[in-house]
Image (cartoon, rainbow, N blue to C red; front, side, top):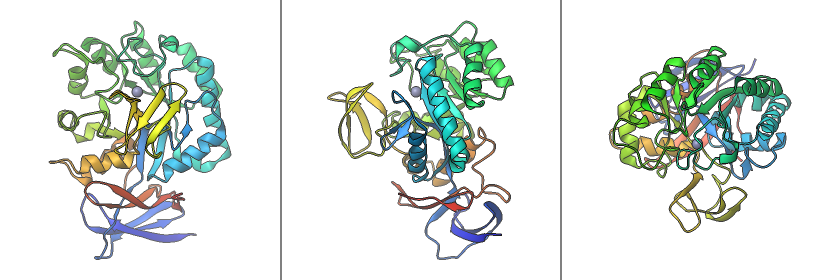
Length: 380
Ligand SMILES: [Zn+2]
């Protein structure tokens, strides 16, 4: 029996705690040393990761080794659970990528633990410029239960979340069938009407994907699909808090409108995230620039070419906003997303010892150590 402990300040109580770990599980939580200065929370949970540090889930062909390397990189940022996210592509390519992730999970138990399932972002999104974002138009297609069953047959039921636009004619039926099977449906990259948004929530959609992004640049002031998603209490919003995708005022107003409990921070990180600043040539986006402040834009423009910061940066950003706190920022990256991945992200006796210890200086978070099922993560 392997027993040890880790200490840190609990963001909720701001008091030092000591967490006793036995056989990979939290066995006891008790008061910790009074001179503690680092923070301790459940490991972060990221519902949307496309890549990191050069490892790209949406590259032309994905192999299990890339999934393994990506998982190591993501774990080193304090994220102990994440959803690999595949964007709109041909069915053949989507299935090949699903199979590569399934193989990586079979070969490596720590990948299987960190990756509970896959997030399919597309291909049933809006084909329009604007809401479609950077997804290739030629592969946008209507929802199809038959195709969904082919994804699952090819990957041992690995698809657990689907982002789609509910403007498609048969959307409610498709959503209801996925929800019946326990698959999360999220509304995103959409040009749906408010009525279609509410019909999707009624059918079983429970999330909005990166609310405020992947939407037309111009909308009628009201009604529109943003107000509908902000208003519908059945929908939890995921938000990219990288300081570039949502202006601070918009982010704060959305957090207040939905309420903290109904918000989840995501990175939506692309493969160039975590790389040094500079100019890069990418197969899909052409020449892009990564600035020192983590803004990834098409070369010579202000147009965003993806998100480039790890989730911990979003947590630090929200924690530093006036009228928010480290506690609520951490909750939106642990317990709240954890509700969608089997109640992970909670500091409680009996839970997996997926923990992160970090320094926070009001503007950034520095990971000191992370544990997955009680095993230390290599911080690379
Ligand atoms: Zn997106």
